[in-house]
Image 1 (cartoon, one colour):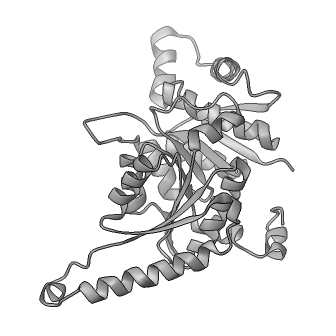
Image 2 (image 1 turned 45 degrees about the vertical axis):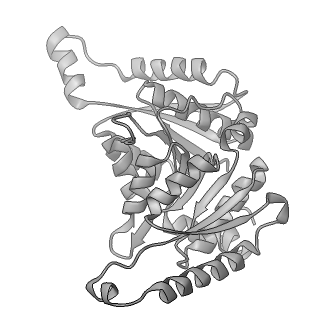
Length: 312
């Protein structure tokens, strides 16, 4: 069964760029592309009350088809389906991603405000907090690729920030697979955060910080041993605020893709942590956010992947 990529569309420039990424990926992998437009229930009711003409979802589907034909005309033959829903966008995106068994959600972040603040809409934030499938979040300022071959030029490098938790290995394997597909270098990063506590202020921490850095370097090197040399794997251990350091590295090393994990808990499921949130706000890169469950499957042995319906 072909994989399915869900791309929510609000007809903005941001969703135009997201659609280009989604179409390029779907075309390359032979995936089904599912476009979703979500109408506000108050607007659909207002049309009937104000004009006496009932709202027709087929008109929105037609607009979706035309939008796709204009934006993704160079993506080759695509299996494109259009779906229209009425309700709150985030709820409908999550509902459709579950009911359609999608493998990836591609959606835009929204809006530029101020010198350094790239705020994304509440819809994207809600989806990232509750998704059970990976989300590729594309910056609103990114025009997007017209074909898969252009993604490599846009990405240049894959950056994978790792917190050295058990999820780090499967997260790195996802980043490795993408880097192999695009033939781009990969950078593994760990940021050592300053220790802030009353006790820390009384202690001489130089030795402790050095020990933390050394352990992180050893752990990264062990993880990168699984990455082929042709990808020019590089490990970096930095000291400071994680989101700030990730954003700086994206800018300084021209890393166009950040592969980052979403935090989770047994009771609440995956949740977007503060580092992921701030990376999305600060970095102008495409961000692939991976829920813990998907990262675990990606890092499973081949036999476990086969049970999960994934290629070995």
